[in-house]
Length: 560
Image (cartoon, rainbow, N blue to C red):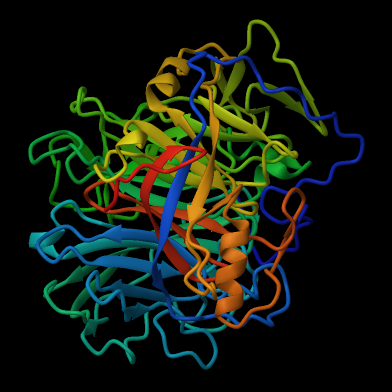
């Protein structure tokens, strides 16, 4: 299949979660629920944790330009130091000291134009998920110093594909070479890049070591790039999943189109619109894997499509629009059976949460939520519900029953614009949330929870069963209050983020979305290695921590 660079492509370019479709079917009622536990109304208490350096301006124009800090991922490093690392889409990777709560720049990915960072072709001015997208630590990071990153490159921009080490003198770039891009059908204009970094001294705040490009994936547009990276948290040395990396790769906007590339999320000969599974370390799992086409990683032999002629062997699951967050739940009662969870931003009607299974087809662009997507209309599913297995644009091999979401909410007043991600709470500071999946909406800042046991029950192959979800209201004590009013109860995070935005020099929240209207929260979630929950908001550049929860009329005395 020919891959064309820099060719023009007509996209339906819309803010995340926003769909404007003439003649669209009305929003249908929520599907029946798998369980009827009548979850109690709860309120979450949050406290300000840290203000990250401002990389944006409160008077910036455009959808995301006014965001003060485009925080995207927060992780606690493995090993003895227990520092937080946080990335900003505009380029920085920070170390956040847990005692002082001050951030220092560890790496800066932004070398565009006059910037002195690592990568010349980093696009950061277009909003959405452009720039430095995500990172993840190797499970053996404390010994080998390795971690992995995703960043986006705009093909037409000038510059080199090799990182510039002028701002990181400890980075050895000799021997760094870009990889051959994995083919993507259709014209492409961006590439998602996965890089392996090896820090020779993980005990200081600077990088000294090497970098190695693992994978380069062309994308049909700047939306829905590679979104996240994750390792199985319970895998141990000798296990088949030890140091095996799962990669969430969006469809590059292809599934939203009305041309031939619409099938890309369904096609097994391309990696876009998929969850991938690879072994980054060429010395690991030699007896269980084969070396990739580009020679930079290994592919496990137990991946589901290894033996399918013409299919990409890296694919673990497919039929996904924008699985921009991956996470695992390890139930203490079932520690050997972790669940891989993806939050998937929808196109027409539904925001969804999927439990990811080996070889499963999640239906997009022919299915969304628990309905069939036909052009501009959502309709009921056919019975029986099957899809052809597309190996290429013209070759199919049998049929498959789609795998359906375990949670969904709609684009409307009772829902939101785009799912932000979420985690099953396994911490100790807020026992009321134990075993509950906490999630929210990016633009509106609404929060919900669901029992994860109900989500597992909804993962039953029956299309129109989803777990019950309840809204979480929020208690917060505004530190800028004068006089101090104490804790106040808010229906969503929006007024909290607005207050934070004003306290840092802003006037009106930036951005727009269909449900949120003018002003976006731009919510993200993080956890530490103890399972405690943190909420990040790009608009005000703040990190806040969940410290208590209780009935919506009052909060328990639990504190962290």
